[in-house]
Every structure is written in C-alpha cells, then in structure tokens.
Amino acid sequence: MSARARMVVVGGDAAGMSAASQARRRRDAGDLEIVAFERGGHTSYSACGLPYYAGDVVKDWRTLVARTPAEFAERDIDARIRHEVEEIDLRDRRVRVRDLAAGRSSEESWDVLVVATGSEPLRPPIPGIDLPGVHGLSVLQDGIDLRQAVDAGPRRAVVVGGGYIGLEAAEALVNRGVPTALVEAGPQVMGRIDPDMGALVSKAVRDVGVELHTEEQVEAIEGDGRVRAVRTAARTLEADLVVLGLGTRPAVGLAEAAGITLGPSGAIAVNPRMRTPHEGVWAAGDCAEARHLVSGLPVNYHLGTIANKQGRVCGINIGGGDATFPGVVGTAVSKICDVEVARTGLSEAELRPLGLSWESATVDSTTRAGYFPGAAPLRTKVLAERRSGRLLGAQIVGREGAAKRIDVFATAIWNGMAVDEMVNLDLSYAPPFAPVWDPVLIAARKLSEQVELTLRDGR
Ligand SMILES: Cc1cc2nc3c(=O)[nH]c(=O)nc-3n(C[C@H](O)[C@H](O)[C@H](O)COP(=O)(O)OP(=O)(O)OC[C@H]3O[C@@H](n4cnc5c(N)ncnc54)[C@H](O)[C@@H]3O)c2cc1C
Image (cartoon, rainbow, N blue to C red; front, side, top):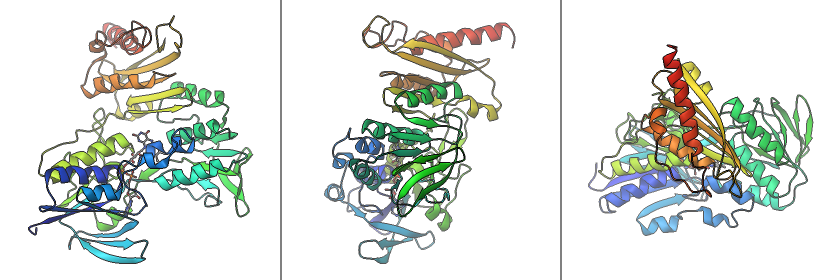
C-alpha cells in the first residue's frame, strides 16, 4: 500500500456510501482517499420512498436524497455520478470506469475496494416488456419517471407481481385515482408470509379496489409502439401504464466476472466483518450475503435496513475499527393502504426444509383497547420450536399500529427467547395504544400454552 491508501466504492447508494462515510470518520483524507462510482444520476437516495413519491405522499423527489455528491465532497469523499464500473481487476487492483456523460473509459487504481452494486429487478423475457409505458421501480430515476406517468393521468394500470414493491405501487396508483389491476403468478400476494396470513393481504388488496388476479402468469405485454394491454392465460387487461414488481436478484455480474467468490445464496460471500475472501475486497448491501440467525444459513435479502448496517460495519473496519455484522432474522414491514403487513424469523414454508418441528398459534386482537375509538383488528401468527418453545417466526396483518409490533418479536428471536419467556415482557399499555394484554403477549401466551401441552403429551 502507498502512503495514502485509495478506497474505491462501486455503487453510490445505501451500502456504498455508508461504508465511505464510516471510513472517512475514522481516517482523514491525508491517510485515505475515497472515490465512489455511481452509474446513476444520484447518490444516497431512498429507494424505499419511491412508491410514496409516485403516489404523491412525498411531494419532492429531492427530499429522498440523503446526501448529494456536493455534500460528500465537503467530507472529502469524491462521489462521481454517471460513472459505471465496467470491470474489476483483482490482480492489478484496478477498475475500468466509464464516464457515461463524456463517453470515455479510464483505469482507476484501488488499495481497498467496496462492491456495493445492490440488486437488480428481474425482467423475464415476456414479449413487450420493453414497450414504452412499462415501468420498473428500482432506482430514483424510475420513481421520477413513474411519477410523471401517473401525473399524465393514465386511464388504467396493471401491476405485475404481488410482492411488497408491487403492492406499494398498487397503493400509489389507487391513491392517485387510477383504476388498477394486479396480476400475481402465485396463489397469494406477499408470497413470503404463510398462505393463511397472505389471504388477509389479498383481501385487503381487493378491498381497496384493486382488481386482483392470482395464479395467473403474464404471457405478453401488448401494444403498438406503446403499451395497450397485459395478457395472461385467462384474460387480457387493458392498460396504458404497467408497473413491474417481479422481484430482484443480487447485482453480482461485475463481481462474478472478476472472480469474486459468490456464496450459496448467489450473492457475494463475506465474513462477519464484510470482507470477501479476496485481500482488500469488501462487499455490503443487497449484493452481499448475510447469515440468517434462525436457520444459520447464508441468505440474501434486499432491504435498506440490512444495506445500511452492512455498509456501516464495512466502513468501520476499513477505517481501522473492529465491527461485525452478526446476521439477520428476516424482519420486514409494508402496507397496502390501511392494512399493514409484517414478518420476522421464518415462515412455515421456510421452516419445512430445515427439518425442524414447530407449533403455531394465531390470535385475533385489536390495535387499541377494544372500547377505544379507532381500535382496529389485528391478526398475529407466531411459530415456535416444538419442544424448546424457541420463537422461530412471527407475522402480523392489521390496521394502523399493527406492523411495528413485529419489532418485539424480532428482538425476541434475535436473543433466542422462548415464547414462555415473552409472556411477562413489560410492554407498554394505555388504551389509545394497545389492549392491556398487547397482541404480542396474547400470541406468546397462547403459543407457550400450546408448547407446554405438547411437552405434557410427550409429542
Ligand atoms: C421501490 C422500493 C421500495 C423499497 N422499500 C423498502 C423498505 O420499505 N424497507 C427496506 O428495508 N428496504 C426497501 N427497499 C430496498 C432498499 O432500497 C435496498 O435494500 C437498498 O437500497 C439497498 O442498498 P444498496 O446500497 O445495497 O443497493 P442499491 O440501493 O441498489 O444501490 C446500488 C447502486 O449501485 C449502482 N451500481 C450498480 N452497478 C454499478 C456499476 N457497475 N458501476 C457503478 N454503479 C453501479 C446502482 O446504480 C445503485 O445506485 C426498497 C427498494 C425499492 C426498489
């Protein structure tokens, strides 16, 4: 390493810029030069806010940008937008970078490399998928484009895919008064929660006026120069606006081509300090693996919560500190209009292949004291290991105030708690916030009784 080391970051959003910022806090510009390359036109933006910008809940896209290149420059971080890294050379410690505005490529050296290329939307080869009027929702520019399309007053929209991005897009469209249909190939929306809970979400989608078609695969997007309809085996849905939410995969093409090791999940293999097996090469965010603390397996989830934390850990270590990222428990929340959805730990479908046996309990309760104005229904499902009672997973569907209760379960899973240890948790209560027995406690109590019964029965 030369006297002044050079850190190159590939990808200028959550993970990459967290790593850059943390490294800078610990090492000044005389000791470490930091250059971040971002192929898009923005750094450190909130992709999570995009559906809300399209839906006019967030009025100005600029508020979604946490820090611009000029702000990074004030902290001696050279963030270059519209610069795409085309190749990584591990042996000579160089990257080839294309300045997209100038249309030229150059070689840049590095002593420390952070790969933070994020994830990319799945785009199966459906005929017509590239027609004008078909939108993805991945980077900030997608959100700006979708907002413009919605502002133009489409007559009818179709959302393809019922994961959380599809649902949030559907909510945005409905709230903007656009008649909307949603097509989902699986039997329910929100495929990562169990079918019994997913059915509640599918109902919520229909209740807000979205025309939902499950178990239907899109065969073609039709149009002549512009999108006109979406065709499935069962029907043709007229649409002059289509939003794709078909899932994402880790953006690892660049890393793979360079010979950077991928793990079993298909994302970049890292140790708990976020270092890859290659000297001086780090990775963080959607493109990197994490360990699932319940299954012990490497997983690859695409969540801003994880990207920011992994980027922070990576940057602290590059800065000379010592931080580790222990793993994840798979906590996520979303909503469709008034109905909130949350999950943590593992679902039944995820538990099945692990060979674990479990008990589950589902309870119906309310978000506030039953007599209090605004009290609304909330259903909680909890899963615990059959004999030990160790909490394995939880899912919640309900109205305002429901979803964030998942954080109690997430904390319990994180700490390896059994459901009987949760029954007397000192959770807060006042009528406007919860019943005297919070739904979290009712669910834990019911499941712990069930675990006790199975133990008594010797099952
Ligand atoms: C619509 C939407 C809603 C979401 N909502 C939530 C939510 O509510 N909660 C939550 O936790 N998460 C949410 N997420 C996920 C969250 O935004 C991501 O997990 C997070 O942004 C990942 O950060 P990252 O830095 O790893 O990757 P990204 O944000 O994907 O950033 C990677 C960056 O790298 C750049 N890049 C890629 N390749 C190159 C290259 N070769 N050269 C230069 N630059 C490159 C890309 O342009 C991109 O800007 C949402 C995502 C979307 C799209």
